[in-house]
Length: 169
Image 1 (cartoon, helix red, strand yellow):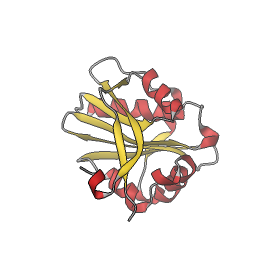
Image 2 (cartoon, one colour):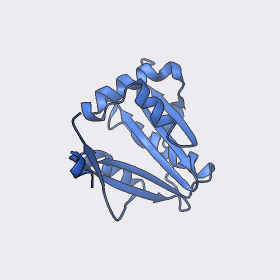
Image 3 (cartoon, one colour):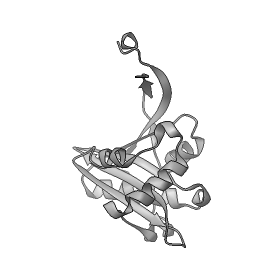
Image 4 (cartoon, one colour):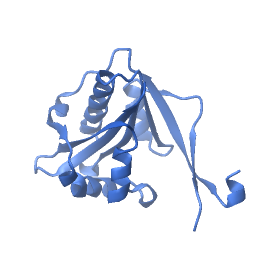
């Protein structure tokens, strides 16, 4: 249907889900540095985003606002490094019984330090407190590190993957 209108496959994404009624992973110590993000943080958040994602996936100001507004209940969380600059962030939201980890990024210099795990665990606990019974996340097929993180934290592959389409205008 979409191919008739000029769309082509751009990429396949892993789609994963996690039951929030089961035991949630312990929030690691690094999570004590996680704070609520505000509009004043958008510029730094976008700097982390641009340093983390390929151009196709990078958000701009409007894209970040849309990601935060994509669900009826949402939140932006940030984590700062020793120099007080934002080194990671997450956007999560809930709609009905479903929770979503909509965006997760940790700057390259801070990757592997547990900050991503802290942001994911923080999200899972928040979603359960907000009444979600399942959490959903997707990640690029090539992002093996993110896939390992999500699986280690109890996410399971969904029965299908997502296909991202694109069309040149």
